[in-house]
Length: 229
Image (cartoon, rainbow, N blue to C red; front, side, top):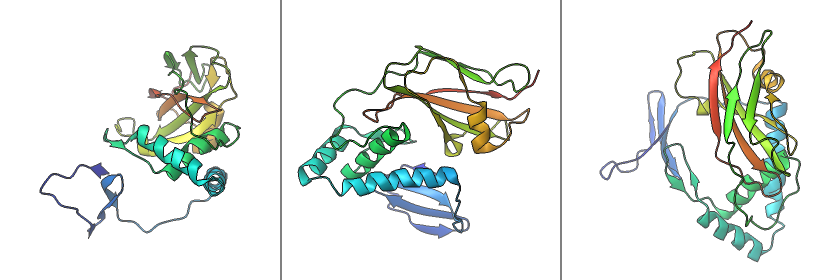
């Protein structure tokens, strides 16, 4: 859990009971004190491979190219979960952008993007019927523009009343470019979370990803309870 320290709070660190306080260059946070476990599956291995590829490629850039990424990162801060602006390092910005390009099937870029991020979806309507109905995301504008992919993250919540879900989101699908609506998400969700069950709450967060620049639009979020007809 991230938090904003007050003027008299200082810099808390260490553990009390089951809670550990710490910080990094992006701010202070609390986390559960747990013994780390290694989760290895095809999704984590594939994601890790993309990060390794991008990180290793960073070492092939010239000093001027690396400086250009540092300048780009300073001019394009990200927003964290508390709504605070955070400036990435040049290396972190390079890896973030190129990992997205790789997941979309593109080629690593050496220079930071100069174009704007793609526009967000105008509308999004989701259905959650695993019976005779449908499990689709219907969106506009459709089809997506050339080079633009549907970037879908999802979460399955066993407690329908759970309010916070962002820590449960996983990437479930990056579509081919110029995909036309609707998109059926069921197979991708079940590949990550197992079979959907009536009564579960499904959260879907869809953005538009530019496969050439790695830039991504603001997300459109929808959720609902799994039903069957």
